[in-house]
Length: 393
Image 1 (tube, rainbow, N blue to C red):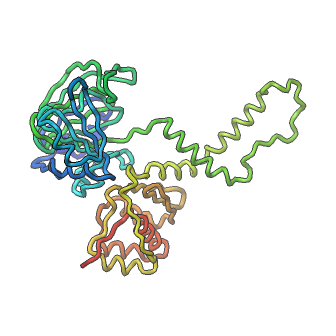
Image 2: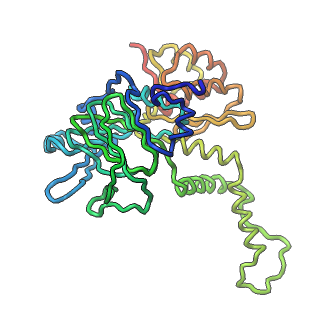
Image 3: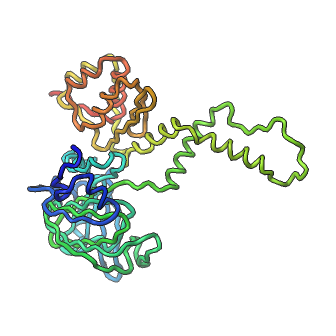
């Protein structure tokens, strides 16, 4: 509902927040999530960090004469046994892909498009633990889930801001405190891009960072041109041609008409809106960690999909999957985990249902799977691991 006051945003509507705060200034929201209970414990996070497929890090503020030490997971139990009782931090990326309950938290921020959401990172620290004063190039909501953490906000930064040269981490060389608060469970601090921030655990605490994607221009360009090159390699008219050209008077000169013709050839490869949309959807729907996708080794027959749905105890979206869609002409294109499927526009409601829900109602799915193309789509999603099924015992 438009202009509805949200407790999550301290009584602001999503429209007010986006107009006055998003990418502009920080916002402290006391009691944003009343009675909030952390979906994970410190032991849960330590256990996840032992897994090969989970991205994890430990940051130690000081060890002997070294400062801000970074260690990459996976770890083992001995790693934690050797840590001091204070002044270190465990980071676990993409918690939303491994802990289903975190999806509920992530959905609280659905006033921002799904493609902009990166992941939910968990930060556990005993007293004094920190990742140091730093800044990011993306937006983040810092959700205090357990214990208390003191946050300091500092100066605005950019790529030229000085960082320490005695660590591989991007720790700011200088930090000027402008604001300071202690956050308790259920409190949220929104930090816009390029604003320096520095959090220190007051006691054993867990902070959940809901981070947002900020694609780099060169990354987009590299991916798009690679996609175009793959498409153009099969095209018949992808070679330069110059019929009826005039005699060259200065053979070494790159004449204007040749430069313009070559530029036109290059631009013709990237000017298609349909090609751009298809690439963009596939690119933005790529999973952050492909290890979360476990393809179904069994043959899933589209003709038997109704029976499989009917017998399922639970049908749900893979927590690490990304679902997006585009309406294009008389079609709707569904993008899932880097793949695309084009359907007639009459299936728009079905595609929206697949994208918006985390758990699917069997009867609703059966209603939608009344045509060959929708059955084939669900079969493909099950085969790829984007949708998962738990069969009744």
